[in-house]
Image 1 (tube, rainbow, N blue to C red):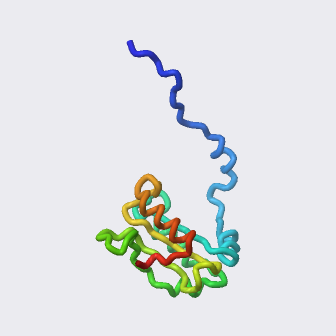
Image 2: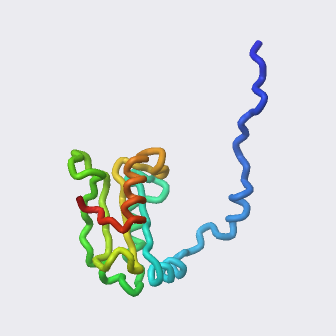
Image 3: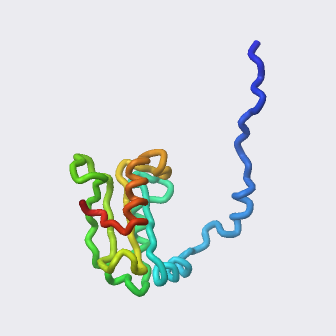
Length: 140
């Protein structure tokens, strides 16, 4: 007979969920517009995310109006690769044409990633964050 483990994993601690219940299905639109008018913002989705789909997110973002929204709305979606020599595309980026340190939006769709980007594509996730924090373009 096997000995029982000293600690047993227990799923279902709902403390955080309980505190967030009043926020469930509440629009973040006013807060997001205020952020976009004041700070650079990065929003990303995994291309294979079935919980928060990339097309739905981009459709929502297209409805927002902020100070630099015309620059973002007019921006082309560009291909992003972690390294210029990579054969595989890491994802696609729509980024305003104003300087990266100005308020506005960078929207990234990460290829071959689902809802958990760090688990699905850790190298691509780290490259995305480093580029954005260091104000580096997503073009190689």
